[in-house]
Image (cartoon, rainbow, N blue to C red; front, side):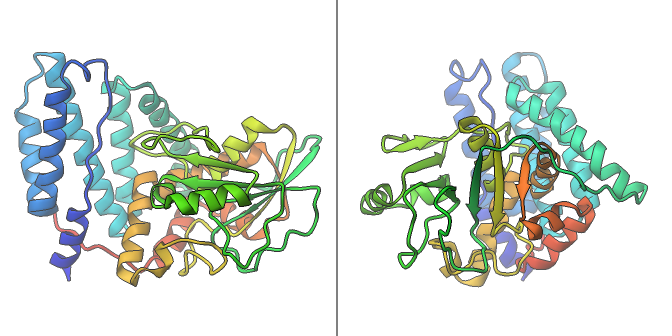
Length: 355
């Protein structure tokens, strides 16, 4: 079982890197390095890849900026592998330790502004919420939410809502994180948000159908060319080390488009339910075999970082008006270790790693 899981994860491995000023000048060298990292992991597996990457990284001198750049890419890929191992084996204390080291290293060595700022934010969130809850056993709770003078209500319908969508009031804006099934009646003032995974798998016919159903369609994707009627969505702060997931990206985008909003949020449980997607939205993930489905979810969680997403949401929810949304509020009020325990218990796919 251990070798099988290692093989599945290593074959899916995709290296990370950053675009520094040197990138254009040494693009071929950096691309070759990326190719070597990716295929070392995919062909040899995590155990041997870690040994080789670590050996090479230590052998590289720091006599030039290019050498520093090459060394940095090797190092952050080691951090990525280590953090995936800690997350996959449900070792929260080790996971936080690795992320803190990664963030500190990026602040000192990176030339990417987003990475540096994300790392600073992550360390501040860990210091504020994790250090106290894990080491002092002090439960930090969110009991108050920002209040202003909302002039508009937005209902956000998430991928794991237990109820079928019914539009009801027509004075609201309705937002969807996934396309609804064909049996749902979609109100005219609806906004659809698509992530990169979903958008890239849509056929041209499906894209045309969606553009007829939704008033606006925002796409969170940095690798595809977004053309009308689709709209490139704004991204919150994020980098290779961590980034906000679907709900917080949606709220970030909505805050930039509308002022004085009150939100009602349904169908978001931060992957703490064993069933990650309900039957009311369209996604090919829920039709995959269980192991493959959990692997896709694990990759998404590892890419964004579920701990960062939880801490970021915990902080940002203090700044927005929330209407109802009791289920999500209960989750956000939990301490980081309580939330991660819920997440670990819900996810069935447990890759067993050896290092």
